[in-house]
Length: 104
Image (cartoon, rainbow, N blue to C red; front, side, top):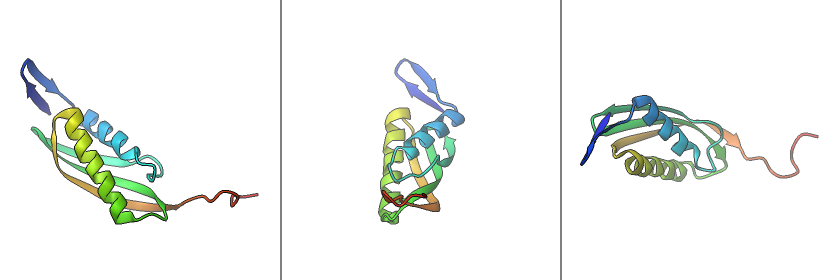
């Protein structure tokens, strides 16, 4: 994808765009493990799909909305690309470890 600027064009590869989205998805404390992200970029518009494992208990719909908006906003800030769609698929719920309840 290429983003025209006043002094030239900046090109960001699809792989780099996907890596940025992966990093952004992993920034939330409720994400358990590395996310799997796919991105489709056409010109200055993108769509992103994230497979996430989330720590549970947590309000999953609210958490997904927060992560979705974070990815959309930060990708726009960092790359100049408008992200029209961010799909969040929760592929696993990971129970939160309670202090003192580990294996002996």
